[in-house]
Length: 531
Image (cartoon, rainbow, N blue to C red; front, side):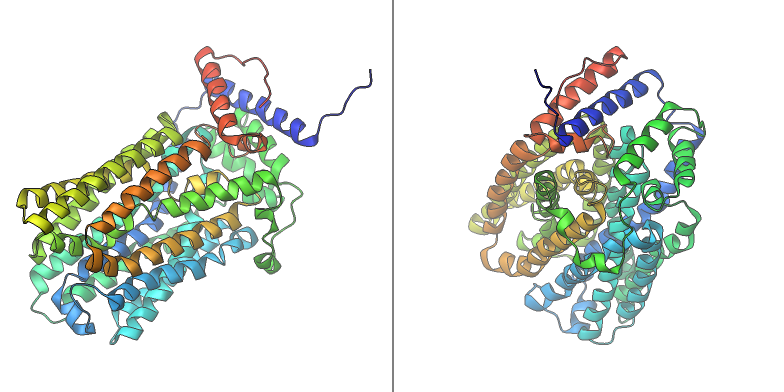
């Protein structure tokens, strides 16, 4: 009988599955010490990169907080209760994000660390413009510059962390990146509260000083980022294999060049990256890599869907307009609103840190499903409480609404905050990643623009029915995640290629996790099966 030749995709899938078994076996029998010197250096490196994440959190809470300050609203002639003018001041940040996302491809041209550097430098320049603004157009223009460059840094930073982190701890290390969104929120709300408390009678200082502080974290990154190595995957794409090997050896194997993980990861990365053409300026217009095959289209679908879900689940409305929402349920004291804003940010940070670790323990799918269900329930109770206050003047209902606003923040922070920039980058291939992260930022910007521009109008017009809308939307998100999202926990970025070549990637990822679990429990390779 004539032997039939297997398709290339099957060979590749089987090869990657064998590689996955090898990785699981190494981790079961020869796991590097996560407290070793190389890992400690990796944590320090990651901690510096985390400062890029503070920029978006700082801005969202800063604008939400200073919008509650009479000195700010009176200086620019803005209404205290929010309207289209207020919305465009907030939403211009999303416009800048979408424009900045068009240039994320440049990380494949001159490297991840340079893109982070120029992004943070631009944020400092944008901060100067906003802090010195004497009229609303100048203020809006400064915010556009700030958001444009923040997008460069904020998109390249998680891409860098994902590519330099070991697979077993990628969710924890890279996932912790977005938890610093809440650090930025805490810094901003605390600064506004302190300045309002002590400088409210000093003209415009109570809102200008917090604006100046917006350059603190990006300024620190500017000074430090070029002291750290490039992404090993970027180096291999530039044929700098020895440098890539040294990075893997140092940060993944605690300096042991003979550790089997070094050879395994080098082999995987070379197989998927070597031979790809170097990026040029012409690549800005070449997007076919995002849709050239069925697997790439599925990957892009997950990238866009989660990018949208991360911004359009009710969370942006609360982070930007919490003071306005508190006014709607009867809390009018400025200091009280600022304190509650700080508490909301602290709760988000604490729960997001725990969530970052849980994503590597429980897995992405279970965490996202549980979080989405919890968010739906919380928003339903927020809507019910707000309705009780508005329709019947029930103060207990208003209290319940506030409580579940904070529960919503905790649930969202646990499941979504760590994964917002991470999952969209995990699910795409190495050659798609830079452009896909641009797509991620454009999607985030579009969702955020809709939220922040329409949000104050909707809250003023339909009140608690706006929360009801998100109850139904989050229910849809739950169903979509269940039927389409793949599990990425514990797999290298190259091993995920086999999952997406399968007929049903979601099912293939769950089967891969079962095999990996058996290997980890037994400490031995499993019998070979087809993805």
